[in-house]
Structures are given as C-alpha cells and as structure tokens.
Image (cartoon, rainbow, N blue to C red; front, side):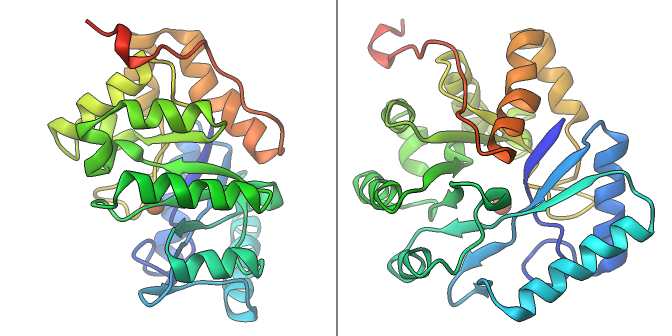
Length: 251
Ligand SMILES: [Fe+2]
C-alpha cells in the first residue's frame, strides 16, 4: 500500500518529535504493508512555517538518508499539506511548496470551520495555477459534515478526495465516520491515508483501515483506495474511480 499523507519529518510540525519516533513510525507503516510513504509536513504560515528552503530540505535529506542507513525498505517521498489561506496562496504562486512527489498534485486542507464557497474559490485558484488539488480529510470539515454534496461538486471538478483512516475507524467521532462512509458510498473518494502524527494515536500504517474497507466495500474498491490511486498520484498519472452517485438520489 501507499500512504500519501503523513507527518514523519522530525521536528517540523505537530508530527514526529525526533528521529527515533520518525523511524518507528515509518517501520510500523512498513510492517502494516505500506511500502511507499509521502512525508507531508504542514505548510501553515504563522504556525508551521514550512516552505521550500534549505532548512526543510536538510531535515528531509537527513530523514531520507537515515531510513536508507537503517535498512527500512520503504520508498520515502516528499510533499506538503498546505492549509489554504491568502498567505499560502502566495507561496503556491511562488512555487515555495512541495507538491506530492514533484507531481502536479498538491495536498491541501482547510480550517475546519471554513466557508464552503471560499474553499471552492481557493481550489479553483489552485487548479488555475496548474495543480490538481487533493483535498485532505474533507469528512472533518463542518461544512462537509452538514452537506456531503459539497464533496460531490469538488470531485466532479476533478479534484482528489483523501479521507483519513481514523475517521473511518470512528476514532475522531461519529460525524467524521458517517461522513466518510457516505462519501465512499457515493464513489467520490480517491484514496485513504493515515495522516499519522505519532505512535500512540493518529497512528502510522493502514492495516486496520484496509480490513475495514475490504469487509465493507470489497477488495477491488479497497485496492483502488489504498494502492491504485495513491500510486497514480505518486507517479503523476490521472486518478481513477467508479461512477459518482449524486446526492439527490439518496433515500
Ligand atoms: Fe495532515
């Protein structure tokens, strides 16, 4: 499997605190069947000031080299999780953010209480700059929990939809789980990722969620969500999916 959303670079955000923890997180992912991991530190101007610069590149290189030296057979790739705001839009324009493995795919998130029209406007601006937004954990946003159909509109605009494993496993709460399952039933999810931050909660690996998906949605869908689409994203290829089901047809 491939995990496109993780916070494993030590000391750059609220993810791995140090190298030891980062290595444990990466090893745990591997033992759970993940062979490729994209490290996606927060780009959140004013909170986590990660941008493309020498300091972040150095931290990334140290992690990359250490994983190799330790012999952990995981392909580590780089990316970022960009919180969309006026300030981060400027960074995107100036090419100061890491896309997912240097592709045109950009992992983006919103403040949980953001206005949905503002979100759509910003996503369109990102797309106009030549990137395809991959929307991180939409099931956690207030507007989406109230109106799942917002995600249908985003999906139909060609954006990627990434849900979190912990939402599906019910570890964030009932609303997150219900929303994530609803998006899956409507075929408007591109992939599932761990969004791992540490070892005790928000954990690395995709084993539990693989089993959940496999039992509930079947092997083919599970493969698409945990392997086929993440691989396409890593390789900069078009994402695939089943025919989306609009919300007006829901019982
Ligand atoms: Fe994240």
